[in-house]
Length: 512
Ligand SMILES: *[C@@H]1O[C@H](CO)[C@@H](O)[C@H](O)[C@H]1NC(C)=O
Ligand SMILES: *[C@@H]1O[C@H](CO)[C@@H](O)[C@H](O)[C@H]1NC(C)=O
Ligand SMILES: *[C@@H]1O[C@H](CO)[C@@H](O)[C@H](O)[C@H]1NC(C)=O
Ligand SMILES: *[C@@H]1O[C@H](CO)[C@@H](O)[C@H](O)[C@H]1NC(C)=O
Ligand SMILES: *[C@@H]1O[C@H](CO)[C@@H](O)[C@H](O)[C@H]1NC(C)=O
Ligand SMILES: *[C@@H]1O[C@H](CO)[C@@H](O)[C@H](O)[C@H]1NC(C)=O
Ligand SMILES: CC(=O)N[C@H]1CO[C@H](CO)[C@@H](O)[C@@H]1O
Image 1 (spheres, rainbow, N blue to C red):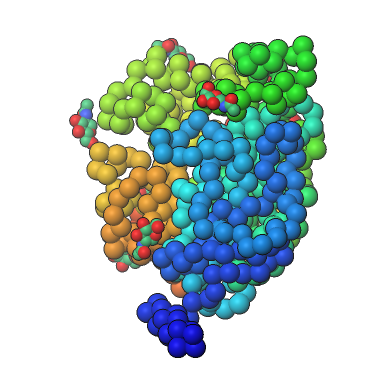
Image 2 (tube, protein in one colour):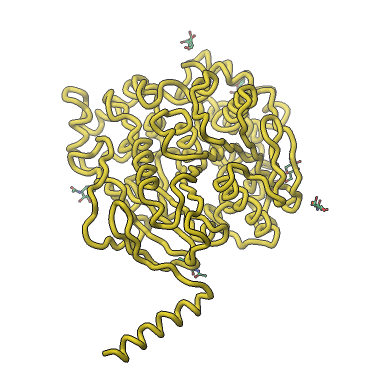
């Protein structure tokens, strides 16, 4: 018995030696419960950690509820299902019971209170999953606690049919952040050093948390990457637009639509991408009281947080590709295709005179650059670039410290037939997470260098409120930005990023 124990201890200590460092225990006692994780590459990973009561049955379409203390030891050893959606390829498991997070922490503690980076994934508020973002490399290489959260999507997270319980997906994110604040110390994180970061819909989620007062105390710093959609609907607009959709589900408004939708099979009420333009954050007068740019203009944002923001140089290229017929830029896009597509996406939120005005604004751009690149400029400016630029002008005028980056890098290994997408939407993420995310390609030496630079800037920002280091000589404030690329080893590449045409978007992005 005693000998057996000795040999077990010996094996355990040999395992520590084999790892080259002391491994911290896999079971931690946190405020909300005792959690057991797994060793995952060079991290301890606590996968599928629940932060809310499952929003199922009578809790569908209701505010997220904190969980009671979990008795016993919770096995946080496998990923949770993704939130209910229709956007993923085969192989994903969906459930309405999806309010979980994955926590990655370096296997050997580098110190007891590491900075915490909480990632909010994108996907147009319609799709997305924590499993797409393994946080292990970022955590292990840069010595941080990396948390990937899930939140309700599409109709389950963003219903416009009632005047209460709107923007539930953002409320889920708030509850996840409360869980992080209350528990992260047990995982090696410092609850007073929490940075939220996100890309696309995740970037605009972070943006919303910088203007929603009830979110202010839940994080310290914010990184807004390629924030998607600076023009969002009101609840009333969403209700009008989606009434016919609800009617096709047997909820025609003769009874309360939410009460009716609660009785339906989740599969049957999961919207497609084309049906999801109004299942997004909306101005509800409670959580979100105006368009985000208007809130920033009126100085209604979190002054206690330091903000980092950025976008990608070819931001609109993927949208041009996917929305103008899946052709590369060297293939001619007809005027008819260009007109139809631009009008289609504008018609979602704008009336006929506004559509005409905006199309006239971009007609000279398309005439000069060709319809493919003209479309890319339009899509990029409308959804992402111009809102970001106008916001950073306000930060500058307000004399707050804000950092801006521009990602303009093409990996030598990026698939050659899609060269025009390398610096497009979402493609900075591999250089934060240290691995490919959406498009698989092996990392070249310059890719590794850029990933070291960008991931260390993100973690330095979380740690010191500043991304500056010898690896990246960041300027503060508009119009100067840190350029990541085209040359990965140019540590001092700073340039202005103004864009005159953006002034024309102000009237829309500050309309209400
Ligand atoms: C929901 O609908 C799907 C497909 O129509 C079906 O496979 C599933 O069994 C249904 N679930 C319930 C609980 O009725
Ligand atoms: C467009 O460029 C690709 C290479 O990127 C080439 O394979 C293709 O033939 C070109 N198409 C036209 C119409 O020039
Ligand atoms: C495209 O729209 C412009 C106005 O923006 C118009 O002048 C032109 O005739 C349209 N072309 C086609 C082919 O529809
Ligand atoms: C379009 O909306 C704008 C802004 O609300 C309004 O001023 C204008 O009258 C509307 N035009 C039409 C044709 O509805
Ligand atoms: C972005 O990168 C491309 C090469 O990939 C280069 O031609 C262009 O000048 C760069 N833009 C800026 C502003 O540096
Ligand atoms: C990249 O930038 C570094 C540092 O500024 C410089 O030494 C090097 O020559 C540049 N490489 C290219 C290909 O421009
Ligand atoms: C080096 C290493 O252990 N890599 C593993 C990291 O985790 C993923 C997912 O479990 C594995 O696929 C890798 O092999």
